[in-house]
Length: 582
Ligand code: ADP
Image (tube, rainbow, N blue to C red; front, side, top):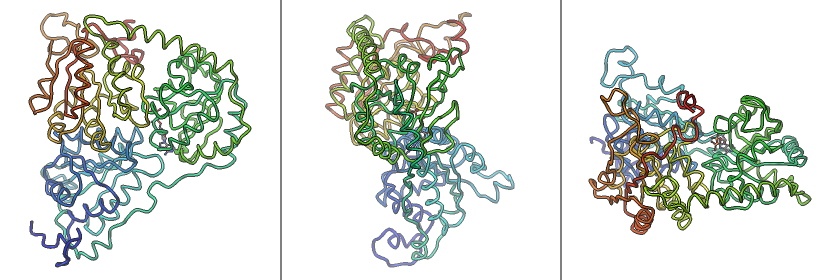
């Protein structure tokens, strides 16, 4: 490679004195505890992937950058370290950009590192190979964006990217590394000195005592209090404190989908099965790491007991969030509590002290009654064994398998496949359920599977709609290549939402239908994994049990009734055509 000094920086014999851009990038990442890179090699970063692997970093190479990016974003969520996605210039960069925006929107720490073409040519628009002003394009979609032009600035560039990704509200960061940077050489000792080991990258942020008092006063006066846990609470890894807060106050709680399992969904204070009752009824709501965005109907309207579609329901809100700008974004926040969740929860617990009165029994009893009614209704539905299999009978099996394997990761995407899984499959441990997140997008599936397996070392179960699976399906090769313990269940109803639409002109297939009777299981077999085709719950159970037992990459093509599924799942109201049809 013409680089004679590798050992000087990477730590073997110090026989020469120069280092280069490649090694400085690798050393800076390693110095900051980054151990994995998700990416896709090509010009100008191929050698970076090789050298990173040689230097002991884990390099997971994908078939498409979007999936590598989604893997990096969720690795960030799971580990609180920035997930790294490495791409080539222009098209590779653009493919990774979707995931960068996803990380920013979801508050996941991630760094998209892309190689880029020559600045001088790009800026004069002279038509370089893969010419693109990537920094400018990334900026509006990232929490921060940086470019490094000189080898001696690599340490600073990476330190800034790490701080920006993980401090305060986490997010996606773009780091632009032009091709020329990698081959720049400099004195090895000076190179070493230029690197920065970031001290306290995500500093704690203590809430103000008066803000804590204000929040507690409001909570104490509540007759029908409710705690709402969001994925920020899961991210914070303050599991013990959150559990103590819920149990000590005795307040019923609702987990957002990625906060499921922070306390087991079977916890007696969990109000998930009475969601449509507690939201409009609650008088004081404590939001912990959850935004009042569309997923919570913006905190107003009928969901919250408001008289009209946008009317305030009368609730008072306490919002724990690290971002001081989040409060009042949709409705008035009466008691904003700005700080990191761990510190805020500790302060609340301390303020509660010993003399806390639990919520009135009428409130908790009313919730318990609704819950048991709804749980019994669901049990009845799950006990049915229709032919052909439907979402419920298939997910009844998944529910049992997850219960028997509470430490397995659960990846979930689709429309109906997402909505039904979220409500049917209970979670028992924190950060085990990872899904489409704030945008409700499809395409996260296989990227998340790879990252979940690599970062957790636990079995991964992916429940995928057949449409959702198609966005990242080629990554089954990646799963096989790295031999990851991932069991994918494709709930196959031959189409988007369902498989029964027809083209009224009779010319083409309808835009929402796929090849009937498709065998997704064969895709996995093509790369040496296990493919299973099932049509009944008992076959599905046997296949999932075997997949978990063997730890081999497995794809189960679970055929379900093609008439099953509603258009847009539970968000029909957001789809103008489906809402009109209703
Ligand atoms: P959900 O979709 O589950 O409701 P959101 O993504 O809407 O969750 O909200 C997550 C919130 O958590 C964001 O507003 C973010 O600022 C906040 N957050 C993330 N990490 C922390 C943390 N460590 N401490 C406090 N707030 C956090």
